[in-house]
Image 1 (cartoon, rainbow, N blue to C red):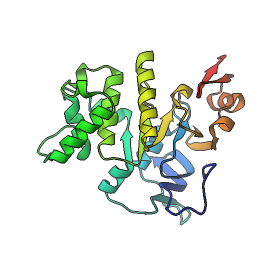
Image 2 (cartoon, one colour):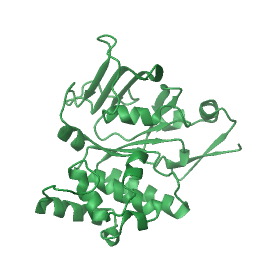
Image 3 (cartoon, helix red, strand yellow):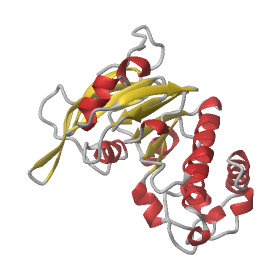
Image 4 (cartoon, rainbow, N blue to C red):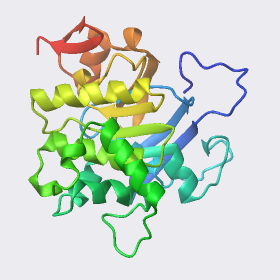
Length: 271
């Protein structure tokens, strides 16, 4: 499923190119013939109810899940390549998931969590931390305005603070795209406001965003493309204004809603 504004005379290959991707968990099909093309720097939201397969989609991108190789129509490419090493993947996608949030919920200071992003570890052990890594970590903490959390343990932070630290962990490798999995779960209104402000700042700095969520209000104004997901497949893909309609969202969540737009954000009401 190509995006609405794909330029077919592109100089560079797409950042992500999926065609006919199916994933099984035992005998259960959890992703069903997914196709998606994502350009470098593009901002996109994957919107769907709980159980739609959104987290499975992220685990497929991160290579925790592998698609069935049914025939030559199956395609999974990152920046035009069928194979790559973990270091290439780290500089392409920075992933912040709920699994990661759970794994990092321990007595470990924010600076160590962010530094561990260089090694794809949870904390530092016998890793060799260079001055450049220290400098980059300080820069990221400053960019996210969380320098004051540098020496505070993750267990002593609010959900919103901890989520920004995990975003910092993802950003240290300067990824082309930040992938956020249900990022506002458990955030109060203040934390939600701070999170959305942070995402907008990241987007404006040139990092693409893949936002995976069941909340319309997570979709920041900089995201102009929305993919609807249910039952393991993508049911619609297009410009935000065309996708986020009363009918489409009512059908997606199986509840009658009215969609309103305010200052670039969309909200569902009437349910």
